[in-house]
Length: 138
Image (cartoon, rainbow, N blue to C red; front, side):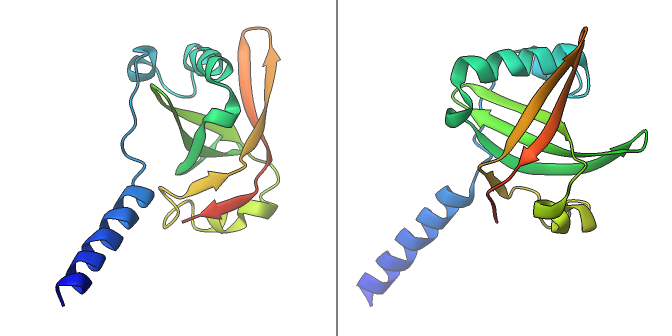
């Protein structure tokens, strides 16, 4: 019986650690001052992502947004000393139809495995545009 309690505690702890993406540390104050839709925020995020490398980042569902006739997924971007949001424009929801239909409700905090997006620059304007997704891990 004692072994079952110990096993239960270990399994609970592992599940909590595996499912908890809230331990997100940020050292760039621009992410606290600016909105994820601002070009200053996007430029700072792009710089941090280039330093860390996309392979060293994790992406998590934060929200769904519509603005000016465009649809976006707001994702939490986390890595070593990085905790920020990326507002990613989505036109093809094929791999994320459930997120769109539910407007991210029930998906918040789910990991986006192999999440990829393009960076489009036009002058000082920066856009993050969804390209592909491997899996949603809830």
